[in-house]
Image (cartoon, rainbow, N blue to C red; front, side, top):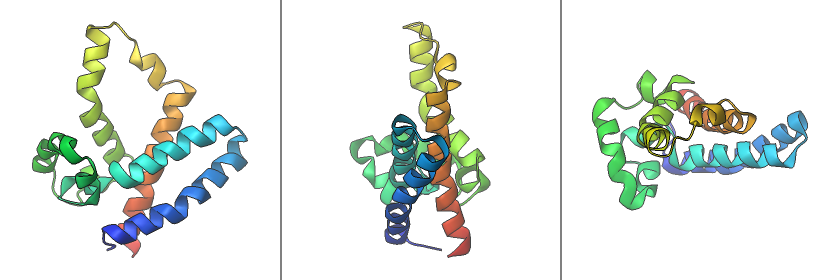
Length: 141
């Protein structure tokens, strides 16, 4: 299984590949930027290794404390942290529940409409691509 440096190298190599693939599929600069930015964020700061004291965890700097309950809830490389689709869904729910509730009840913002918009789905796609590449690297290298 790759260490943190290897995961970072894989991410740096795959970022332009993901951008090129997204360009070939969608042919829109905005879509490339959204998906590639989400992929980059997922690769370096939002992947399955947040369940341990890792490079992604330490990149959160002062805010890494928000991941301590997550680390206590899940064991490393479980399906809930490294599972394709489920790992991303759990991290999005974990990180997003407080702001979601705040915006929903205090500011009456309908985030559900945004989440099912094209942009929201592109963000989720980019996050999931980052998680998938990370998990596949763990399973194959």
